[in-house]
Image (tube, rainbow, N blue to C red; front, top):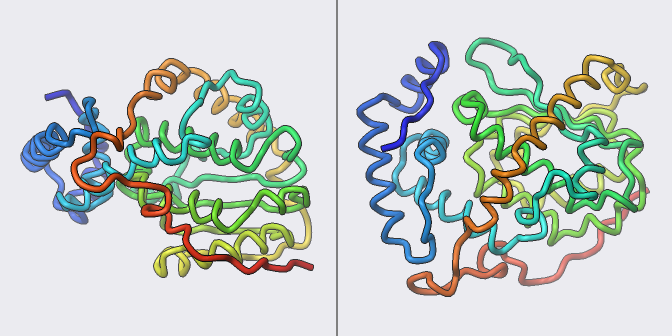
Length: 298
């Protein structure tokens, strides 16, 4: 068995109290998941022990739920290659999003066992001609993958997001389609071993309101109740904060440092031709049947 990184004191106590976490259970449950995974002909590769542990913790050590989320994680890499494949940090399209500073995990939580806070800046920093909605989502998933590997807090205590949404370019409205929103939300809700505790939105533009109206159709009831939208009359000072700029550059460098890992992980995805039983498709996973009535914005 590989060696899993230990939790810090407060996180360890939190995980033990909330998930019945512990060294003996970890060893036994990882072995059970590994035995299951070796029998999955469509997942013909080795899943890292640390990643298995992240899924176990996010699933509160439910073996069946862990199996389901691991399967989803790798299946979605097959079904949604436009955001979960071709993730070279030095490609032109990814560099554009990294330079825009869209996503920033903040270094300090609210308290010792509190969730990781992630700040999103959606506004004039975005250019729909060079940064498609899909490529913005791709970079967000890349950062989430890094957090899963490095940051136990994001897995154990979850995340809270703060989205600053002033002046999003209106040209994005033609890219934010209901099927696409549903697909990208499903990836986060069902595929990643990260628990979303709250989504806080400020300076909501008409475009973001439009996207949110679509999103409400696909968010789970629990997650929908965790969205808090607040109108603010002036731009947030964090938009021009030198410290935030410095941290954005640190995270850009971190994503770039993972280049080899992203490229090597291209092949780690489900092979639906080898799945026992019925192969999974976009329709069966994301439920794209039916039609959507266009939502209007002012």
